[in-house]
Length: 411
Image (cartoon, rainbow, N blue to C red; front, side, top):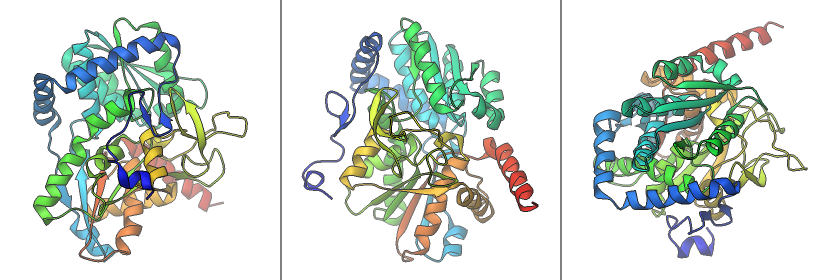
């Protein structure tokens, strides 16, 4: 770790301008500057309001189903013959993933600000479902933007959103995935600022979104902290989570950042290979850039054009990473690695058979790395994997993957 890391709390960021070291900030059209300042002021006020916090905590318990269990994966632990493995069961949240923690917090904030219309973007569909769910609960209009490629591979979640009353708008521009959905949502927001709140689904975008999403998702790590102390009487040795934009990972990591004995690894999508366009591992081939409001690591070519990305998991298929993750990587507080498509699919199958838990393809990237890691650790050591979502949404994509593999094998 650097001298800076040793002298200061890792939880001290962002600064007043929304910067995590050199990353973050707010790079947006002038028309969005005022609503972002308005949002920051409203959030700062809400954080200090006991009634807001009590309402959020009550709904997290009664509607979302928190606290989620910290589950000892006994058969997985026995199979790997190394560290004890625990799963933080965010897949048991209402709607099937961690995304609702943030959507719920932001919809309460939107109502506090007098907004009557909600927009969102989604890749894997879980954020869209969560946002449609909380919008329905409060009777708010909801529009969700989703790339057409993602709509095809996440058809179940598209149906769920529509049944919940949301309008799902297919995006046909660019690569027709998450990046393009975010761009369309931002265009909508610019045109409808007066009555619309944009619920960003990950720790991305212009300030205050990375901070705000992190805070709403930190309930994951706060629970995991007291749960592991209750179960084992000590801190875990290692935390593992997949990283797309990075909300589930920062939600788990943040409450542990100032515990030096706890190691942390974020797992990106290694896709099909190391070339640009074959993966979505921003820390393996990415460079400093600005995308959709924030400065961070971005996959881009020599001319600064945003690269195509690929992952078997729609939720990790994005060209940028949250700015706080970029800062934590530079400081050496969190390590980042990658897992390819095939290893993730294999890990999904292993966890399903070991524990009767079908994880999301996104989550499976973290599981795959933890399988490597646990086998190299001692039996008295502890790993927590953030089981960020369940895999029901991915069965169609998994079937298509298996079909492609069979066809390739037959040639």
